[in-house]
Image 1 (cartoon, rainbow, N blue to C red):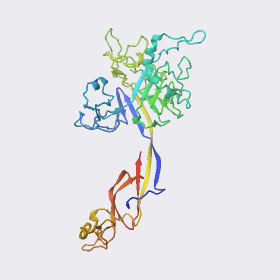
Image 2 (image 1 turned 45 degrees about the horizontal axis):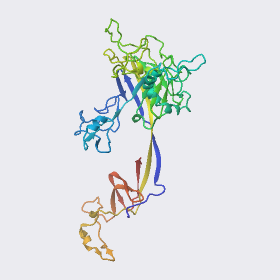
Image 3 (image 1 turned 90 degrees about the vertical axis):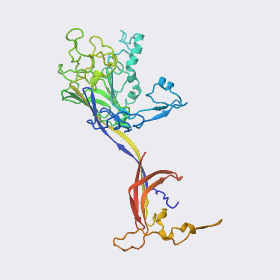
Image 4 (image 1 turned 120 degrees about the vertical axis):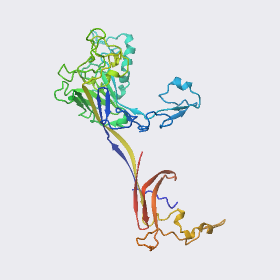
Length: 458
């Protein structure tokens, strides 16, 4: 195959392209905005990003007719979608088309794990200094409220080489300098990987806590070891570690419950525990039960309408178990004065191959296009001679002169020229791997030499 040319030893380069996209999230009074609310399409909310950018700006009603959608046919393999319940799947006949919906969107989620949980077997110490086992009936409640955090235990422990604060088996009663993973209040923020790629860049996480437009506190990973340290002058926790970052997994863990402002009058409805009953039974003033700001309340911008039916908190306790939002009609209270900002940079590594396809002078100047032959020899195939021992094509077939003269009524002398429009890439077994198409065909004469740079991401 004369049109195949092998790459030389210096014509192929493999490297990794590292990207670092930055993201900014702003949360206020029940609304979350990504990258300053840039337009993403009518089917993607301001708080989300689309995974495949499909159907982001199609009709408001996305059905089988006017949308791109995933589908499977029910058969013996039992393949289905997570959104289809097992009972619904079982009711369908074999051969039924089951559809999924695009766009697939993701957003930051917050889970508050309430403080004061009693870990089974870790009760208060007795006279000998040993822990007294607690009642067995507390086991189910403890694990139901702590399961998300417990599932991250292995991930948290792997960061211990960076900081001793990544010590999971700790509580305030054991060591007050360590995060209270087992029994204390934990504010768990989950960041989908679609926002950052392979991992979050170390030292890039920046959290800002505003009240009435004024920056109350700010925490950053200044040491690049995952510790979020308060850096705002005047904050009561300035210089203290208020949380940790799990960079590879995309989690932010905030655990400092100390008030961040010395003014006791600065309060907001962070917990969604409802309106104040100030005028007698059933009479609410609409202001909400308010508490002083601390870092475990960060990102509680929608606590008033999460839709989760919580359990009423006990007297003197500012949260229902698990931090669930009460929805008894008098509890749809958003934090009205607090604003939260989260900024970070992702990191994504893309393997890249760069190839240089050479078209040297004196080569690649023949064409397989039949119109390349002069029309006077259009019947040249009829002159082919072949028998059992030979195959002979006619010689001295004129090629059409495609050289255009700049003078009228004048024909320049013949010169070979071709137009390169596509470059195909084959493997060692001559299997086609891909085709690079040029936006504009390149004219090549026998004296011309070109090198085409091709780039492929894996």
